[in-house]
Amino acid sequence: MARCIFHIDLDAFFVSVEQVLNPKLKGKPVIVGGDPESRGVVASASYEARPFGIHAGMPLSRARRLCPQAILIRANFSRYKDASSKFMKILGHFSPYIEPLGLDEAYLDVTGCEEPYGSPRQLGLAMKERICKELELTASVGIATCKVVAKIASDLCKPDGLLQIAPGGEQAFLNPLPVARLPGVGDKTEQSLKEMRITTIGDLASLPLDMVKRRFGTLGVAIHSYARGMDNREVEAPGEAKSISQQLTFARDTLDRNFLEATLHNLCQEVCQELRSQDKRAKCVAIRLRYADFKTITRQVVLIEASDVTQVVFTTAQQLLSKALAKQEKPIRLIGIRISSLVGEEKQLSMFDPGTEKPEHLDKAIDRIRKKYGSKAIKTGNGIFPENS
Ligand code: DCP
Ligand code: CA
Figure (cartoon, rainbow, N blue to C red):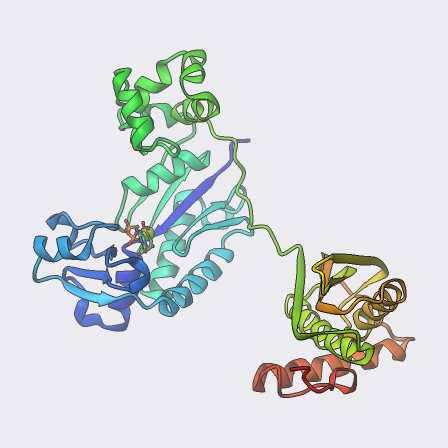
């Protein structure tokens, strides 16, 4: 069965977020930029500013010359991150298969999800409507059987558009477009293709694969199949964290066992708190020691059962530390903890084992206090120890 892939991209994202917060900016040429991090370039331009020739990446000085009446706003990233997470959350209502790309765009595989809406197009419209209602933002949606065609479709229907390329219609849609529309075709490749008299995607698609491969290698293979509307890439959810770690370098090298254990306990508390906030448990616990001479060792062990309990992780780490100290009596300059082989939360209720339930209650209470008052607000007995500065 043909896949149904969406590419969705918010229009003039940074500017639109500012316009929601200050409606007086709507309908006007507005530029977001000017942040020191963006080196004085345009980050986002409203559609009213674009006819003046203003686009992202252009130096602000030039944008000012092209359109002196444009309103310039400094980028405020926390606002955009906030809007972005709300946007991604809305997308999650329409399909579980989401691949976010940056803050304001994503691929979705909605194959089979369209049924309640009647058609992919209706689903796309429902998505746009919800984004408009809840965030007051407009989005453009490309619908196709693969990523590359969906992406090009959404670019072409901006702003506030929806463009569906029917299965089988990919080649006819792509043929007249300039090659630079294809992902992977940058300035250099575009120039090389031009020298071969290839300017449209159709030109590229009609070349023999061998020839493109000889000229451009593996990139050639990819752009040649994209040009034919063929793209097997899956919509992939971002990779989840594979491990969580913390380490501390001491002000002075130490061999003080109590001090090392207290530090280790604090580090365990930090990584386990992070683990619990992700609703995960860890199967593997490792410690890292760096000696005064910079020699570094790692010792690890696999738990019989995955755990998110600080006391379990700490006791395991403590045993690893004991073994390492018994073998090597050199002062230590750094100690670290890493928990890995993370698994989801499907924890069994420990009805008959109140012994493991208690530390969990303690963990939860500590997490709450630390979240509210910061990580220094509370330390348990094992972690209390003076600083070694
Ligand atoms: N961005 C940036 N610097 C760039 C390009 C983009 O900081 N050189 C930021 C600002 C944009 C956001 O990323 O608002 C999204 O990038 P887009 O390329 O999707 O641009 P817009 O959303 O602003 O416009 P469009 O309507 O063309 O998608
Ligand atoms: Ca955008």
